[in-house]
Amino acid sequence: MVSKSLIALAAATFAGETLAASIHRGHERHHVGKRDMVTQMVTRTAWTTVTVTLGQSANAAPTAVDNNTELTKSRSPSSSTAVAAPAEASSAAPSSNTIAHNVNVVDAAASPSATQNSAPAAAPSATTTVESTEDQSSGHRLQRGLAYNDGKLLQGFLGSGSKATWVYNWGQVDDSGTGLEFVPMLWGVDKGFPQSWDANAQKAIDAGSKAFLSFNEPDLSSQSNMSPQDAATNHIKYMNPWAGKVRISSPSITNSDDPNMGLNWMQKFFDACNGQCKVDFLALHSYGTDGPTVLNHLLDAYSRFKKPVWVTELGFDGDDDKKNQAMEYVLDHLENNSTFSFVERFTYFMVAEGEMLRNSQLTTFAKTFAYGA
Image 1 (cartoon, one colour):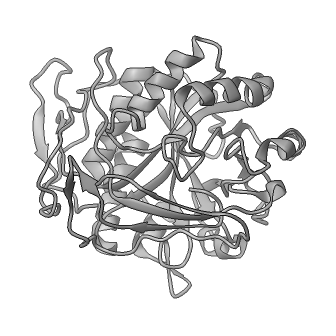
Image 2 (cartoon, rainbow, N blue to C red):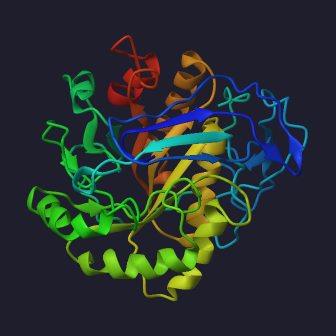
């Protein structure tokens, strides 16, 4: 989320019912920031998604995938219907995990910035190719990125055969020391962020940045915390001037299916924009999910908004082996299934001890992300 922040999976309420505080583990985010701390909660629910098997017609009856296996504590399941393939029809986004974020916001100049795979359901099918202005000179269609707070931790991801091509830190200033493309983010519109934005944005362009990320999770009260209307107004004010110089993202949103969050918030944002916001691609987050659910969520987003997608934060549930299975599954489809050609870039949360690192060593799923599939 925000650069130099903490995130922990925790219990929350859904439909007025308190869920037991038995989340699999503390999923914590931190950064070396020194300023304000805020806290947030998001609902964790069980869900049922629908996929279409590979090679199946877009008009064929979809196959249901039950993702509730390891969410037995959630007694009030919600459901979402994933699209069969990018199409005009839309559906509700998959429900969110329970997340509590503790965020330390640093100075503006460098400021902030799943469950195990169910019996592997194939990703939704049908072949749809989306035009993209992405630079694919690296030889990989999907551009894998490293989300970090501490640039010193990135070296293990940059060895021979690494597929990492870009970095971001939820902030405006590149301190990665990698030489990879840095993508700056205008995290929000308070705490001094906009005052430094113009100068830092131009420096990023001068250094080779090809894209900018807009506000971080404005659909969460503890993150950039904006109504769709305020986000639209500020996007036009701060992001639109860079149109034509770089590609510009939508605000980065959660995967909650709350009526005022996730893809529902995004719809209200575009409605408020009334065609005036310059947005070249969607920035999406997904936590507490398995492989099929992630892919269905991406298809749902593309079906609704018809824009290329960057996955700028992803967190699978489960132990490292389950995460690796999910990572292999998702990367295989994003790299090799042309249905997902609209997905341009992908980062996992995050290069930090306890996340993609264990005792300073890359986890199995981190190695898969950086070098495999």
